[in-house]
Image (cartoon, rainbow, N blue to C red; front, side, top):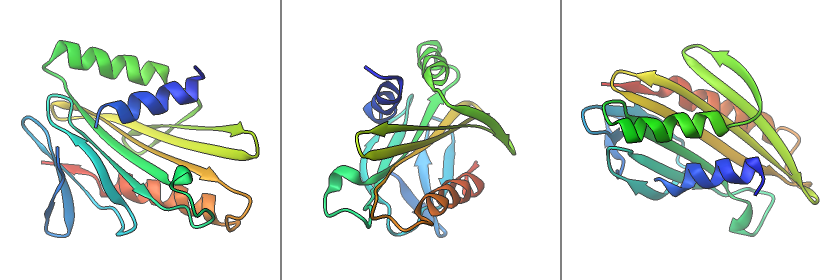
Length: 168
């Protein structure tokens, strides 16, 4: 199994039902609330509860009639006081490939891969906040029919999501 497929599998295999609070959505952890904002094009498709809470959203790729090429965002929290959950977080973070950069308080990994005629791009950001490890990912296909600005728009969506995140 390729490294990109393994990371995608790990990110989607573990997905609380987000709620809304004052225009922001909320992902509940065992002790905290992670608030964030996503555009209306993102639809919740899966969620899990603490100690490893997470949620997954998809958005339709405008260049495809098929949902096979939908973009996905995942957000996962790992409770730091649970050793086995922290171990899963460390395993996940160590398996993420790509170019590493630091954006504010986030460590961000950027990667891409070709699958035949398709390009798959991935952005994964992670950081520790209060009593949780937080991982956010965005994966999307660039199809030949996509507008030239599609990749930049996906990157901008990812940065906006990271900027919107707060923990209380």
